[in-house]
Image 1 (cartoon, one colour):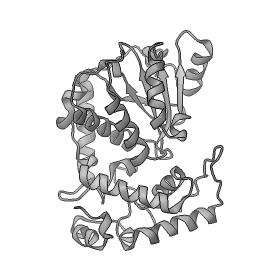
Image 2 (cartoon, rainbow, N blue to C red):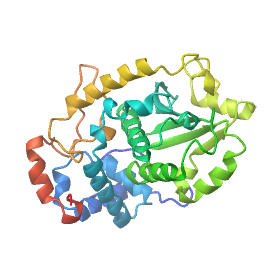
Image 3 (cartoon, rainbow, N blue to C red):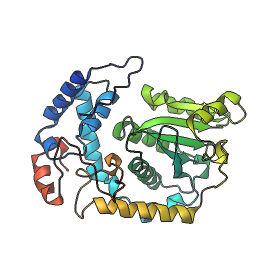
Image 4 (cartoon, rainbow, N blue to C red):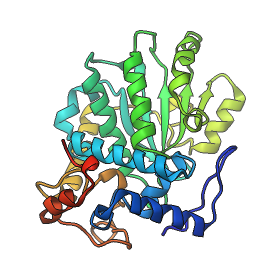
Length: 317
């Protein structure tokens, strides 16, 4: 298994590598024989994230993992393509920045004040597309992303409580330990009342990763300098990069990323058997996927047998 350290916080268990491995093996037994045939969602690193999210409680982590498998099989987030969400992206309300933070984490820029549609389904679909793309573009030694949330033009009508709640649920339930930090940049005073309503459905771990930053506060700006290379950080966040969002340029970039994704997903494969949010970066020698060493790769011809071997509660329908 991975030798990554367990990142503990107040109230969180700290386990030895041997204890972690025992917990992971227990999860595999609880899920059933399908784990030996489905390497991606059941790799050690993936299971560890679900265990950390549930404070190493194996039963709770198992339920969480099963729910994610069901969700991915139903919604197939790795198969969302640019043409499916292009309209949602027009205003630059969410996009992957072309830079990382100093820790190598992918950065998602969000501008809720630039909301341009009324479809909850469309907005969530676009969010999931962006998360999948952000995680696909992580540096090889990273598993977290950073959200930079700009409140330019934001009002109480900019975003619905339903979308906010679903965003929190998807992030916490299906992408555990993927958010490293969320920076709320220049939120207006009126946001405090909205934040009071949002806070109850955020888990403590998620809530603790949310930081308020203000451009007129020296301490806040120092924090940004610690996190980012100011030459690459956009000027709207206090950096020196004046290049803003360009829809045409971004569309080309995303369509290229979609092609890379298609190279890794054979026609007919379900989201269970290959998930881009867990995908390693392309190797410098021309590509390929770094497979989990614990399990052999799976091809599309294995799909019917894998689903037949899964416990009934994890199968479709």
